[in-house]
Image (cartoon, rainbow, N blue to C red; front, side, top):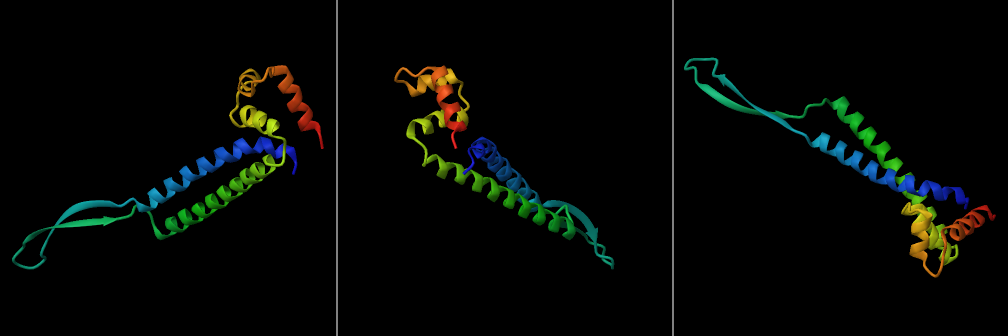
Amino acid sequence: MDKKILYDYIDACALVKETEKDIWRLKKKRKTVIQTNVKGSNPRFPYQEQHFKVQGTTFTYQDDGNLRLEEKLLEQRKEYAEKIKKQVEEWMLTIPIRMQRIIRYKVFKEMTWEQTAAKIGRRATENGLKKEFERFMKEN
């Protein structure tokens, strides 16, 4: 696997969350029901006033089709982002544990090199970790 996909991991995680929110918004929009009360009367004598409750959706059948299509596309986008996320997580299992920790702190949690060195401990310095990471990323 190409190590460059590592940088897509954060975007893939964010995209999954954003897409889930978009899907939830679409489902909520489809479930929105508007209701109102109207008055009417019998057209024949005796004219009796009656009250009716009318309810329905605010969109047409075509709008519903468009919403379903958009939801399908969002589901596909979410699946693709989850696929990238899983690929990176599988790849992470194949690299040395120390590098896994460095990548988790620096890339995934977006910590500074100084914070990463503090988390790694064992006299790790920010410059040393940075060089170690750069060498690892240049290797084939």
